[in-house]
Length: 245
Ligand SMILES: Nc1ncnc2c1ncn2[C@@H]1O[C@H](COP(=O)(O)OP(=O)(O)OP(=O)(O)O)[C@@H](O)[C@H]1O
Image (cartoon, rainbow, N blue to C red; front, top):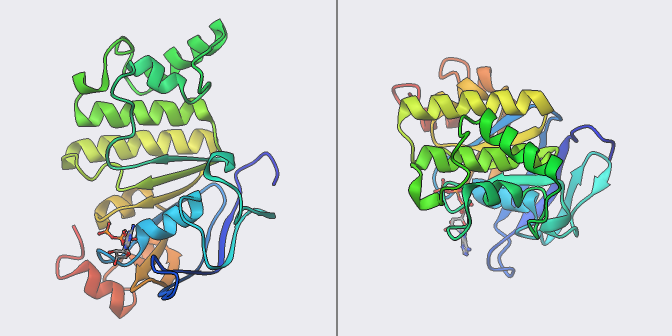
């Protein structure tokens, strides 16, 4: 793998939570340096696919490739990935500053220049001065911004988001997506974003992967795949009458 962000290939992945019944089968490509949205009905396997890419789950067959590198057997901690979940991204007993600093040093031993890096990251997510607080003293949106600040200092080339902003209201979700886009563009991270909001997917993503029944049913440009007028019947049905506001 080169220093730049890798294309991610899920090549013939077979998986089942019951290994005797590998009922999921994923083949797809997440283009290098782009934001891809992973959409599909509830229970279709989106989080499972994301967890296979992150390394939290292991396929029974197939390979996960980051660029030319086969990551299939690589432990989560050794994959060049940052991940943000809907909740519980932060350690409750640590300050906001330390939660971000963990992205640089798991032992929280930081050189002065690294402490400055943490402060800069907090500033860039508009949380300057919040470093001394505990996560419980923040709003849900602020907690997710701390998680984004940690993504900034970790500086990994791959970013995975599993419904990261789902519990926030529409205006705040849009603000968070704008922040995400800004951070993603600065580093050209290969980004995969699971969301249940087609409008969020259309706003942030250039590519889309549609998962249904444990399989990838369609991939392509987000603009086309998420347009009820131009997409395939399965996605039109998923988007519903309103076109998926
Ligand atoms: N840890 C687990 N053990 C057993 N089955 C699981 C586990 N996690 C998920 N599943 C099952 O695997 C299937 C896919 O789940 P997954 O969470 O990947 O779907 P999803 O598309 O992300 O759903 P949602 O949009 O509701 O979050 C579902 O049938 C789910 O019940």
